[in-house]
Every structure is written in C-alpha cells, then in structure tokens.
Image 1 (cartoon, rainbow, N blue to C red):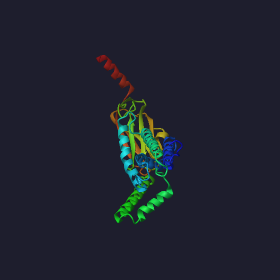
Image 2 (cartoon, one colour):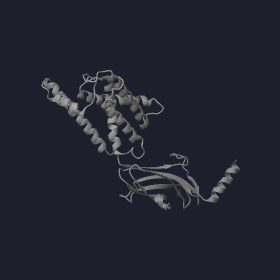
Image 3 (cartoon, rainbow, N blue to C red):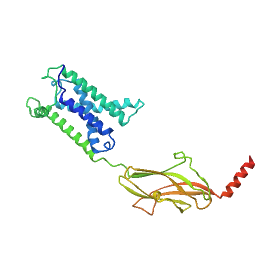
Image 4 (cartoon, rainbow, N blue to C red):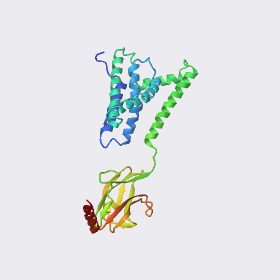
Length: 307
C-alpha cells in the first residue's frame, strides 16, 4: 500500500474543493459567476461521487455511467442531511458552516476511497481516464451483447444527465428575476420601527432615520421630499437626491425643523423614482405635535403644580 500514487479523480476532486473554498472565502471573488460555476458541482456532484468512490473502489463494481448517475442522486440526498444536522448546531445553515461540512465530508470520503483502492491490485482499482470513459460510453451504447432495452435505458440516462447539467447552467447564467420593488422605512431613536419622537416645540429640530433599499434589478435615482400638512420642509441635498444600485442600501438620519405649530399634524416622507416624478413611488408618515416654547413651559409648570 505504501508508495501508491493518488488516483487522478481524487486529485481533481481535492483541487476543485480547494479552488471552490478559495473563491467563496476570498472577498471580491465571492460574488462572481465563477463562484456559482464551481459551487454547483461542489454541492450537486462531488459529495455523491466521493461516497461512491469509497463504497465501490474496484473497476468492476460500477461502470462509468452508473457512477455519474449515482453521484448526482446521492449528492441530492447527502447535502440536505448535512444541512439538517447543521440546523441543530449553533452555527446554523450559513455559507461557511456548509462549506466546511461539505469539504470535510468530501475529504474523508476521498481518504477512504484512496485507502480502499490501495488495497486492490492496480489493474483492478478504479481510476478516472478520459479515454477509458469515452471507450466505456461507446461500449455501453454500441455493444451488441446488451439487450435493446439496456441500450435504450443507457442513452436515456445520458440524455437526462446532460439535460440536468444544461438546465443548472442556464439557471446560473440567467437567474430568474424576482419582484421589482423598493423598501422604504423609518426607524426611531433606538434603531427600530418604534418609539418615534412625535412631540416638538416650535424651532426645535427633529431627527428620523430613513432607509431605502433598491430591489429594482437596476440602478435607480430617487428623490425624497418631506411635507408637514402638505407644506414642504427643507432637507439637505444628499438626502433629497439618492442614487442606488441594485440591492444597495441607503440609511441615514434625516434632520428637519417644523415651521409652524399644530396638533396631530401629518409629517409625510415621500419617495419618488426617476420614471414618475409627480406621484410618490413610496410614502410614509408620522403624526406629530408642535407646540410653542412658552406653551410647553406653561404645561410643565401646570404639571409640577399638580404634583
């Protein structure tokens, strides 16, 4: 067993595993198309292939077509089970735990496959070769020793695998767009959608954190306007005009100063997009009270007198 070379298919798998991990963990590379291209076989093929390699180390155990078909099928069974296990751990089902768990599984199965093949004579141990795979595929289809039904099933299996891979590739290259919308929200003093300041006195400035998230699948130029009882309030230019790329978030405190007093007045936050500048695309509002400074002081004196 000592000195036996590592089979080429195991070397290829280990290389793909390390390459995929590098792209997933390296900032700036994790959102590229190559990450998805590497991630698909990493999730949908490698776990099943390495398990088959560990269970069936000999050439005679399974032919090439059966190994490929079972690799896809077992991967679809293995990955959800690993995900289910992670769901009950403190790490949960997130990118890094999934990457580590699948990599550990693939590495262990590769080690078992190597050990089991090393115990077999070199002529009997399975090893991957493009030439041998092509000859095996030709034999599966063309050999007359097989029945017509067997050859038909083999061709059907090959076509199914090709269509599955092509469908996955199409989904990765041309992902379906979801609903086009923009999130528009207000946050109170504690950074939550609650506990808004609604009591002001004349001349006092108020602050409300406003958030905008673009889910329009394109860059959008937004315009924001604040109105108190249909009267526009002055806000800074960097708040008034906002440009966001797809999936980009803008969240900033917006400072405003009520220009007149009143009770239960409607403070509106209006968001316009570039296609419709006269009708608000999104709108939010708060009901606020604005008192004179003197009136507020009188109220405090009355409250103290009652105490």
